[in-house]
Image 1 (cartoon, rainbow over the protein chains, first blue to last red):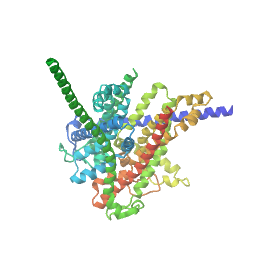
Image 2 (spheres, rainbow over the protein chains, first blue to last red; image 1 turned 30 degrees about the vertical axis):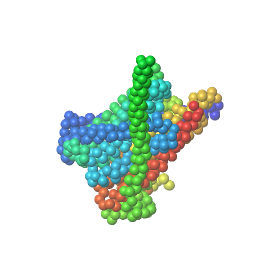
Image 3 (cartoon, chains in turn purple, green; image 1 turned 45 degrees about the vertical axis):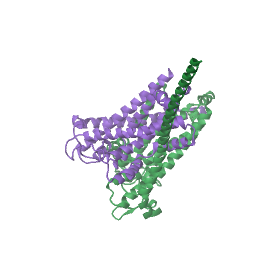
Image 4 (cartoon, one colour; image 1 turned 90 degrees about the vertical axis):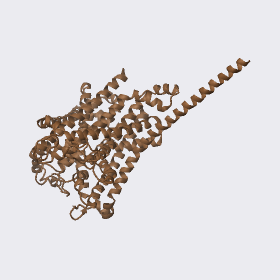
Length: 282
Length: 336
């Protein structure tokens, strides 16, 4: 009887502990979101979207930083995602079981978790040093390198989910693999690939470390891709650590903008995936 | 006869034309096929080239520092831009210790969350809680940084650290870890922020691994009268050991390389203190803090050498993690 009580007690303790762990994790998310909303909303105003980043001690907005982030993220995804999608296609269609494919898969998984600051150093060495100055294009390239592994992984997974019968039917009609891929596989896996793109955008739009020594920052409005460009993460970094209240308020507003954007992107990616699964199940 | 010949000739001509057109069509198709195939192949090879390029670029950038300081670079604590003396020991120490603290907190917590999600959670809550954990993983690291600096650090400074100093600071053996003034920022705070950051990765990986345990095995355990915890400890955990280790290593890889969250709360001091409450530095936060301000080739090169060290460390850890997760996947594939 004593032994039974002990077993029940042990069971209760560990079930309780795992409940506590889950609540702790949820509490952290809630605490971070609450801080962001409460601090961010107080710094938020129409000014944030209309004016440039101000000099210390005066009012201003984040327009140039928002623009810069949008441009570099977009360029990054435009450069990175085709490479990721094509490489994913190779792994799923051409080299399914080749030796090269397993090496690429392994390396890709390493790139997926590699510290982003190292990618920043890489682009700094290869592009910034050669060009002699920081530039938006260097920033976009470092983001592209970060986008490749995400799109590669999702593309391969999604292509593998396409029923083999569809591929065989296309081949039986005499279509070459490229035709099958473009006309049958991509359309069939479209929402999955889009999900990968959304996740890649979410991943790179909040990256700070690789932009620190590629795009740097710019206090003024600039559309020149060959010059340093302002961007939200680096502005947040600089402003949050400053002693000026106006800057800190803007940093919180920027943090709120970035987080809301990223959470919306991740949630829509998840919704698309859920719809996809429902469709497949039906 | 004449007619028949014309007909034959005509017929043959049509066939020939069709054959020629067909050949043109096929040649074109084949050409497109070659182009498409080589495009996908080169994209796949580009992934390898990028990783190779990263290694080469870091080696090249780090070479002046490596050749100047030699192996002593990793064993010296000194970091003095004025006299051009650089050693990586303090950043290495900070990186290892903050990651260790993060793992000590995040591994049991992530384990608990994964267990809750797979074994204990009511089905209705499984999805929302799972998504919430994944959203925590999507929050960019700079957000953790400012949250750590403006919210967590003051709380630790006011409520937690004074208690640690008063109660644990006197203990023999571990007391020195909790000595000194409560700065708020420092090694311990960085470790806690890192723990929150890697928690969702560890929890999500472990959850996926636990999900691969066949229901039959678990039901057999319950059928023998085992409690939930006994099934978890004696069936689920042994079955997914490789996956658990893989998940932990993946989290460790993240923690070692994490930059922005740490940079805000570490204090950026290039020295090794015996106290966890003292400010310190990590490899990645040294690079983030000093790189754009570094003057002189040796200074810049030393920072890139730090990057090279980080690359080697994280590459090893992540590669080991992937190898373990892969082994598990293969086994699950065979089992199914």
